[in-house]
Image 1: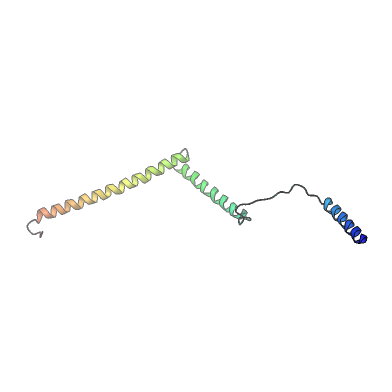
Image 2: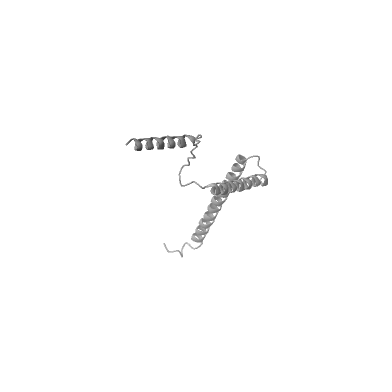
Length: 116
């Protein structure tokens, strides 16, 4: 029994010595969330390129329209959209008034011939 005990004790000392020789420097965990986005470096590069491309387009548009900043560009584009809306409404009103004038003209000229 003593021989088993001495062998176990020597084995424990040996294992402890091996275990303590291992360098356990600071453990650094790289925690990524969500965990399925582990290898998203390519996706980040694509997003960054797309961002740079669109930023360049906006800067070129600012230069073309001679605006000082992106806020000025937004104001210019809003005015353009608003003026287009007003143009379409005015065209609609003019065309409606034209048709109403035609209907009135026809009804005045052919009053007796119209069936009510």
